[in-house]
Image 1 (cartoon, rainbow, N blue to C red):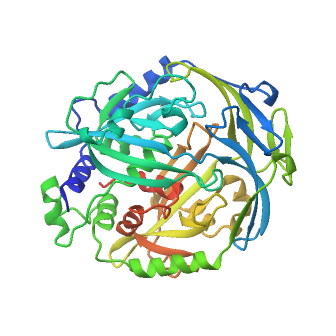
Image 2 (cartoon, rainbow, N blue to C red):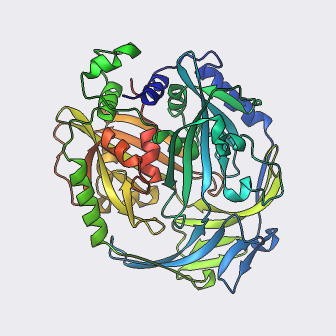
Length: 472
């Protein structure tokens, strides 16, 4: 286990914080929610300042041509039961920054987290990375204030990069969208105001035990944190953290063993790569542009772009005023879901180590056709037909004694209006079959962490669930 992994692991096991307690963080978030003025008003497209329907291009776009646009696409695939459909999609080709500054104090790694307002957030303010910015924002296309802390991520002479990855966003809503997930270590004082607090990684994970406190951008960044590997005695390796001889005594310790022990897995990395490559080769994904006004089963009114049957989501125009932002008032379209979603891991000890059941899932905006998705990923509006979604009924019927995690977590509030998913982890009973359908495979957490080192393997829903894991 290398020194950086040890720092991350120790922070993930340490709640004591001389800067602020976990209860203090919750109070701080509530105080920021009360003291921040936010006004979000639904409007009509003809009053959406600086945005217009470009009928020549067939899109809804900003007058600068920057930020993002709402495009129409036609999808053709041999995956699933619907071979062809059309839909609106967010086209934001820029790669943004999702960055966290860390600092080591007395052997503990602390993360500088922001209480950030996003217009679509449930409860307005959520715990966000130090820096959360699109390229249009940090290059100041909006002509507003500059991004705080950007210089730390641009000037590599003043920091050490702990990890740096490109990761995808929601493949059903974004067209090939990726962000740069990056964590840096500084050894200097970092000036900050009342919107920022230093937290341990364990504190962030404990905040995830509450509904809609930690935003999606924080979750994707911390999901990629490496905890290292051990090839000797796990108890010996953990003894320095005062948790030796306890690795098998709780669900959290079993998760930790699954995360750092690379030796036991029902499928090898080579077998998983061969399976995933084969699945991708079997399935086709064709995406072509279609003018918004020519989308099948979608209607454009002054109030929104809406599916004819009221399904899936709608694109709505909104006016926004947020105190303290780089620009304090603006207009934009947002995606509003018709239902909350449900994402779930089913986990099970196999050969004495926790394995996670994942699926290879195709979504129309994926950068490379397919990504690893949770065992279940669906809109709750489909629950009435649960038999069509593998393992959904099992998750819905799981008794409380098997549920290891169950919280509502928000999606990205800059583009999505009050969207949340129910995130669930269910520990299967011993009799749960180890044999699974062709599109599913069992992986240890260590194997998921291995794939997380590379781009476009784990989707945002999988990463969200990984971020919630607490190792106690």
